[in-house]
Length: 196
Image (tube, rainbow, N blue to C red; front, side, top):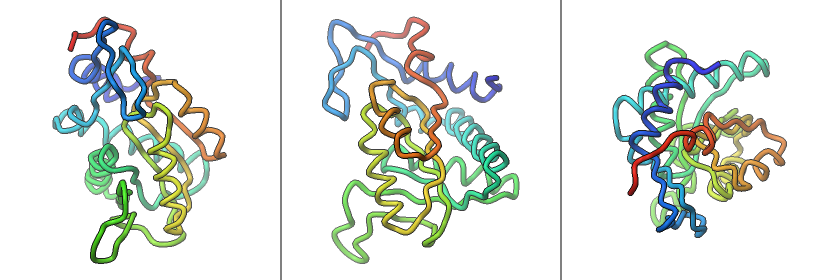
């Protein structure tokens, strides 16, 4: 059952983040060309979308904790897409007095100082949820899982906002870590969108 926050976020994605252009396909981060483009990074700069995302992800984490009889210590994922998502969850979790820490995985280690891949909170043994905005091939999410594991975190779940259903979901599901997509490209593309 889709709740109010999910309905509203889906509307916002359709209205403000989704583009369809069969004549001039978009190049994705994976290098693939697609007539469909979902720009969640820009959308997640909008307060309404950010609040809805924090609520949705927090609720999914709490449901997972109940079902798996575990506690999630932190949430994070690949920079840049996961940063606003994790921050939204941290803010929401603080507001309801059930704090969840955050972290993010750099695209490459910092070139100075502590030279970290992973920045933020969490200690070895922390149970973490990896989040990402959009999954196509799954490569950035897989790198984040690897970096979190190397940091000593236990990755207990992966949640993405939009799964394009282009193979990344299978790669992530095959890891044996519970995987969940809030929406698929099919959910978003079910209505006409604005042209680029």
